[in-house]
Amino acid sequence: MNRSRKQSLEPCAPRSAGTSGPAKQDRILKILRRSLDRGLRVEIEGLGAFRRVQDRYALEAQNQPRVFVAYAAEDLNLARRLCESLGAGGCSPWLDKDKLLPGQDWPRAIEQAIEISDAFVACFSARSILKRGQFQNELKLALECARRLPLEAIFLIPVRFDRCAVPPAISDKVHYVDMFPDWEYGVRRVLRAIRRASRGKGEPRLCA
Image (cartoon, rainbow, N blue to C red; front, top):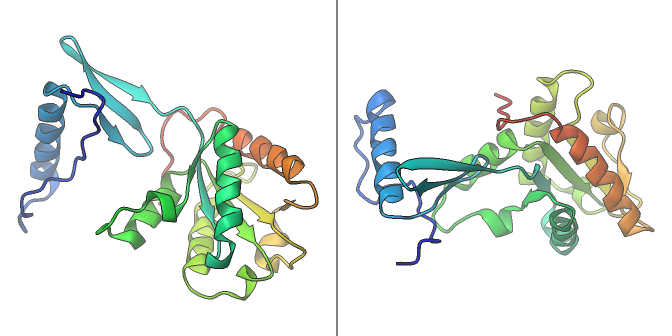
């Protein structure tokens, strides 16, 4: 048996309409214990991975800062490059194109990923500022999350891929980082802000 396999907590059996509250929690716990007793490693996004060590269960906490990266579809290549740079800098970036699974409830998955993130990196460009739709929805949720945090806390980190105008609702309150003309310098500044945002946080943060 390959003991490094990851087990999903989502049951394959049809869901019961009457299963909720304590009953649902008990069901999830049973699935978790059964998977661990089989020697599987169970990963829970935003929390870490559980595994069985002899006669007990151990949690390998996720210590890397969780970073949600929002972008317009036209900027996917640059967003992926940024994620690679953040990953090399010790962060755990979340990009929808890489993280969403087939059949997954993607609006809820994106909302949850934003809620548990330590930082939200908003990628602006001449293309993204003209876009309507999901990018703008993600920005609105990030602003709501930031509103619930202490005034000195960092959560929303705007970056510019080119010389575009960051929306006043953001630029009037939050300083942004230019990823041009020196990409590496921009990455270092973003990483510094992310480390400050995640400093001292031992639990996943929920903004709602």
